[in-house]
Amino acid sequence: MSQLIHIQPLEPNGGIPSPRPATQGCASSACGKMSDAKDLADDIWEKVKDHPCYSEEAHQYFARMHVAVAPACNIQCNYCNRKYDCANESRPGVVSERLTPEQALRKVIAVANEVSQLSVLGIAGPGDACYDWEKTKETFEQVAKVIPDVKFCLSTNGLALADCIDDIAKMNIDHVTLTINMVDPEIGAKIYPWIFFENKRWTGIEASRILHERQMLALELLKERGILAKVNSVMIPDINDTHLLEVNRVVKEKGAFLHNIMPLISDPAHGTHFGLTGQREPSHQELMALQNQLADGTKLMRHCRQCRADAIGLLGEDRGQAFSMDKIPETLEYNPANRASYREIVAQERGEHLEQKKSAEKKLAELEAKPTILAAVVSKQGGRINQHFGHAQEFQIYEVSPYGVKFISHRKIPLYCAEGNGDDQRLDSIITALEGIQAVLCARIGDCPREKLEKAGIEVNVDYAHDWIESGLSSWYAARFSKENRRIA
Image 1 (cartoon, helix red, strand yellow):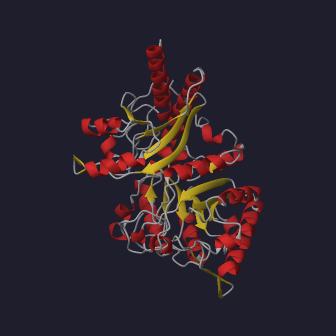
Image 2 (cartoon, rainbow, N blue to C red; image 1 turned 135 degrees about the horizontal axis):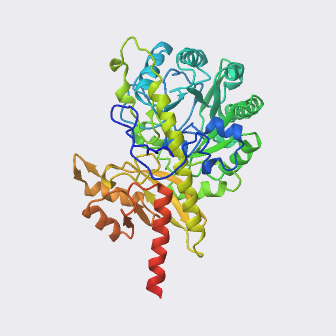
Image 3 (cartoon, rainbow, N blue to C red; image 1 turned 30 degrees about the vertical axis):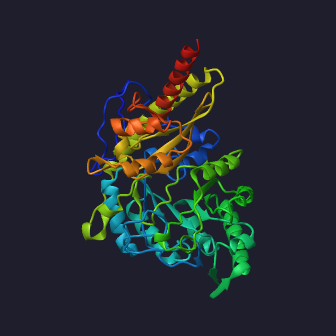
């Protein structure tokens, strides 16, 4: 049997991760129909299995890249304020550089040569990819000639999608993301001050009615053409939060493959209308409660990071500043070797991961009825518990019970160790972000944060460092209740 290798986090130089021996697994490229594929037809799984934004499992292995070639937009959202030359905000609509299609091609080649995990090229603005269609189309056409195996996807509000559906269907675009926040124009009028349609600016309920009709048409056209549609919805407390139940029902009926409920970002520093008028963001608990209400019979995306319009790398990281145009040579040749080798590694790694998931499910199923626990994992990607607590900038939240290990969400946190020193104020913010979480599993943690977390009633465990997340969580959960049973006895 051939020796397996474990995928390590992205190397600093962007090359193929260094291998290390593994003990078990399957080297067949057919392995890897993971947990988020159980209910998917084979043809759909083939489309999404390497797309980090459409497959929860794929985001542990594959990277996306957004190129900011579409600055024009045809609607105004109260939660949006597009910013250019902006490197300090991590949210949709902001970019450091606007690109021409020719510049975008150079950047894609540079990234593909360095980031072996790259599988998807997306255009998400910073305006609207369909409204600024000529730039979007030209970019995809140029990249397709040089790197034909990269998948294309785009993000749009849907208002102009019908005008370019024929072009979309002819290209290598298997996936389109639509942002749909309402199916009731009266609610829409509270979210959208105006739209620009048929050379005219529309406002109020009439604007929202037009937008709604065009979004429903967009979903129908995508379904007709066999293009997967993911719907993004921004959860806005007291405006559309309860209404999103109806949005979910409607978009599912219209053929949406995946629904992603995102929390409103309304920091006043961003300069959005909602931010400046004091519209609050939903809490982690409110978002989770809504997602749980929608989970019955609906495939939800829970691993979204609400990326910038020029994001590069694995979800949860952004290497865009390393690929600014001033750092990219004028002439480049694409070298496919790194990406091809990496895919061979992933095919093997997925085999082992799948076996470990099955083993974890079996271990948990053998337990008697026990309570469901929410646990936070610190991970540098790759599906493992492999990061120092002080180096983390997000938690991955899992639900653990005898029914299995289920990914719930991620929670962004401030970096605790800045320049090698812990920050007590940041630790307080981290503990606040852990509200409702009963345990943290990480690779390492210092004495001070451990003591403060435990004082706050949060268990800390480092016994499963570098294990697969599912394997570590299942072992931790089983051991926890074995100890409790022994104490009771």
